[in-house]
Every structure is written in C-alpha cells, then in structure tokens.
Length: 186
Ligand SMILES: [Zn+2]
Ligand SMILES: [Zn+2]
Image 1 (cartoon, rainbow, N blue to C red):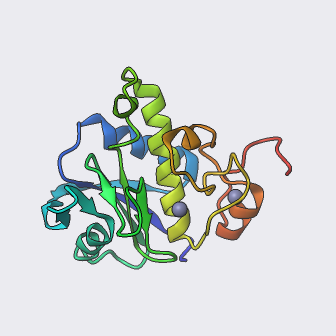
Image 2: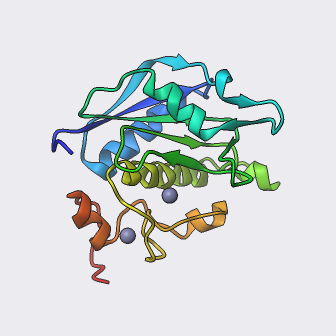
C-alpha cells in the first residue's frame, strides 16, 4: 500500500448529516491519514435482496467498485440499511481483503435496534471501531485474537463495545499504522 493512502467515505443510501462528518473527524484522528467524504450519495437499491429484505454486502462492494477508486484511495461505504452475506444472517460490514472497497452498516449498531435508548456517544464509538475493522481488512489484516483490538471478530454490538478504536501492536505493525493504545504491551 502506498504510504500516502487516504480514505474516502461514501454514503450508500441516505444518512443523517452528522454521521459522515463525525466519522471523518474520528477516523482522521485515529488513523492519522487523510479522510474525505465523497460529494455524492451512491444508490444502494441495486444491492437489495427482496427475498431477505436486506442488502447484499458483496453487491454493495461492487457498487463501490463502480466508482473506480484510485490506487491510493480506500473507499468505505456507510449505510443505514441492514447488510448480509449469503452464509450469515447479517454482517456489520464487509471488505475486500487487501482491496480497495469496504462497507459498514449502522443498522444493528444503533442501541435502538436492541430495544435500548438512543445513545449517540455509544453509536459513534461503534461506527468508528467497525470502520477501523473494515479498513484493517483493506490493509490486509485478518481477524485478531486480542479482545480489545479493532480486528477482533464481532457478531454482536456488545462485542464491538469491548474493543478500542485502536489496533494491537501486532496488527498495527503489519499495517504501519501507529494507532496502538498507549502503555499496552501485550
Ligand atoms: Zn472482519
Ligand atoms: Zn490485533
């Protein structure tokens, strides 16, 4: 990966205005890389699966690829709709390992989905950790056994809550990112 890589956030379907603005700010701080927001919203409706009434994550990645990202650009699509992969009931996101495009969904990250009260601070943390996770896959990282590492796998939002918006030292060194937690040496 070109050391000058940057991230571009793409709205996949409509999003509340602050979502991408806050994520851009949080990601730029965490990654110490430039983060941009694509000016246009990409229509996600071609990825809709009428049988499952969810959106196919792989089709969403294809839609992002149709934007023909430049070699140094990692495209991260953000959607408020529910995503699935054929073998799973749902996914929080999906990414091409070592590729250019990834997608993340807010749908199940909202505390309201589990019947809990709205919590913008918690949602912001979940979206940031999930975004770092998918970008980590784009940078070639696989899942990590360190429970607090953003690359640990998660099937429930509560699993994301156990993770930091950071990479463990092993994952960080593989990507060249300097986003390890301070003072942690495991
Ligand atoms: Zn993953
Ligand atoms: Zn790790």
